[in-house]
Amino acid sequence: MTAVTPLHNQDLSHHWMPFTANRAFRQDPRILARAEGIHYWNDRGEQLVDGLSGLFCTPAGHGRREITEAVSAQLGRLDFAPPFQFGTPGGFHLAREIAGLTPDGLDHVFFTGSGSEAVETAIKIALQYHRRRGEGQRMRVIGREKAYHGVNFAGWSVGGMVRNREMFGLGMPGVGHMRHTQIADNRFQLGQGDHGADLADDLQRFVDLHGADTIAACIVEPVSGSVGILVPPKGYLERLRAICDRHGILLIFDEVITGFGRCGAPFAAQAFGVTPDLMTMAKAITNGAVPMAAVAASSKVHDTIVEIDQGGIELFHGYTWSAHPVACAAALASLKLYRDEDMFARAAALSAPFLERLADLRRFPIVQDIRGYGLLGAIDLAPAETMGARGFGALKALYAAGAVVRVTNDTIILAPPFVMTAQDLDDLFGKIAGVLQAM
Ligand code: PLP
Image 1 (spheres, protein in one colour):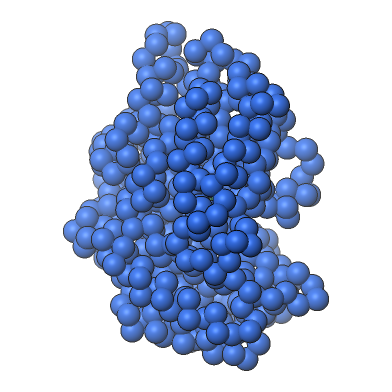
Image 2 (cartoon, protein in one colour):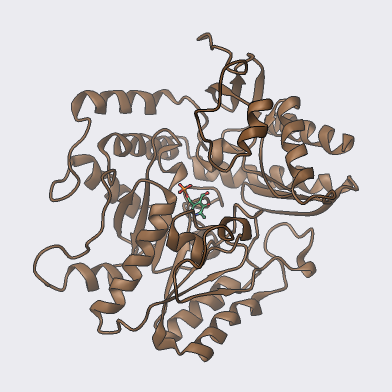
């Protein structure tokens, strides 16, 4: 075991941390220094169970030797090459592999460095698609309340988490938000709720208000992740698809969290049987080892932009880190691991024991709602006087008890690694029950 240097007594002020209460953190730091399998060790040497797969990133567990070796070999072979006007073997190989996992027809893959960039890319592709078809007036993008699509300008504009929006002004013009799907009728409903398919008709209302010929795309997370695992009501996604089809609107699924097995199928699109025109993915694409994300596009969208000869570059868009050779190597090794270890089927099989344990938490009076699908779960806690205080208290108490989870406001979010056993789940849920009991 490698020794780690305790950090909690050092000056921590130089690192301006993302989505973190920086000053509070420095008073009471949580430093994760090492990881292996489903566990972390902090800088005090204490073991913690990973209830979040990193941040939805490491379904195969931490420190997988196969990925380490692939990354190391790639660094020795080709560390970097310009992604514009040059290609590397890994990018083409990986795109082919991903096209084998995406729903039929989503066969063209554009690589980015993060989920936020994937969202911006998908929206730009949608806008360009309509321009190429001579419908450049289609510039509106419809998102949804309580959605998270990353932190870049288009992403937070179409997103619907208030605190991610309120500091930054007006955002992208021409954006509308459908109502969210967290409704009282579906409270404590694990899996898809029976109520709320008609909320998809909000998209039709935007069509009626603005005209279909002004709307480029509708973007949703099939399961809203960061806001607290909002599972689509039965029939909801199908209805969105039908409205998009009727009016020539592109449907974008943001599968940054749900991609690569989290819902028991390669993508949530397959789990719910609804195929979008564009689909983002990130996080588990490299089992968290190297930053990478992507957009898969249907042939209809891709061919409209790429196969109609305009002379020269078809899409004026790209990133220095697009298809980074080391990220491609990490992703190829991860996808091989997922295949060799039947990881998506394991996720599907682990879902029932996971949801069972999740449902059992209803017995604590502090729990106001529980939602879950696949290996995603959320527990809403009764708020204290200040919104978010109870959730943050739970995060700290769980850390002290030896578990890493995510909280959004007063909601605990769980996304266990697919390699957990029933006993590992017992350990995680035992810690959660202990904390809820004490609250
Ligand atoms: N879209 C969704 C659905 C996400 O959950 C996230 C991050 O959690 C993003 C986009 C942004 O991804 P990133 O943090 O890699 O930019």
